[in-house]
Image 1 (tube, rainbow, N blue to C red):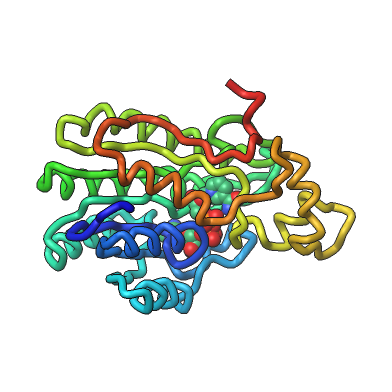
Image 2 (spheres, rainbow, N blue to C red):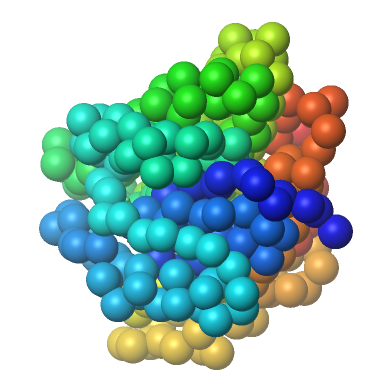
Length: 276
Ligand SMILES: NC(=O)c1ccc[n+]([C@@H]2O[C@H](COP(=O)([O-])OP(=O)(O)OC[C@H]3O[C@@H](n4cnc5c(N)ncnc54)[C@H](O)[C@@H]3O)[C@@H](O)[C@H]2O)c1
């Protein structure tokens, strides 16, 4: 069992979904977890983002299990707010050991229909947001001589995906960014790696706008309606991951003794077996 007692972790986009699962696991391993999330809507995103109640619930879950966590509203697109958050972590907790740069948004659209705001909202959150958080975290981690940075890409960061050109560009960008950072920070005892999940059962895909991409024959498809279509994409016949399946990959990098950096771990259900 990973022992993170005395360590401080920061999870972005942690109000729900994968981020909540990562936060819970980090706290269960003994870390104090700082959970941040935008907790308001981005108008170009066609499904609801997390609310304040979700963020409160993540912290309540952790505390109820005997863990330690604090929450803050934070839009990762706001570099000033990101830097201020890390200053607060350092003044209140005295250190920062782990960053899971998880916050992300998705939308489907053919390239010729993507307007400038839609492009910017995806790239600014998924890629530039990760940059803001990593840049701020590296300075704090250097003072410890220890750090674990985990970026979150996607199967869309390993290949192209129809009607996801902006999302795919952002997730390929995360991989190039984190690999480059890994080369810079190794001498300070910091590793930087990426997890690439395939479909995960979170509100990002379990919403009618996204499910209808997979069941265009139905007006308001449910996850059960789309289950077989998703399963058909998997070499294992499994439709989607649960958030905790991705958490295992995150915890692998967190627990690593400092021997693995600049790598990409796909949690893929076999969906990428035909790619290099
Ligand atoms: N669900 C999937 O199928 C899937 C697959 C591969 C990768 N991913 C990636 O996994 C990560 C987690 O997504 P999820 O599946 O848990 O979806 P989710 O929508 O449940 O969680 C994403 C969280 O990020 C927050 N967020 C969005 N924009 C933000 C911003 N600008 N600043 C701060 N927080 C913001 C949301 O409020 C939400 O709580 C994302 O980076 C996503 O792109 C998801």
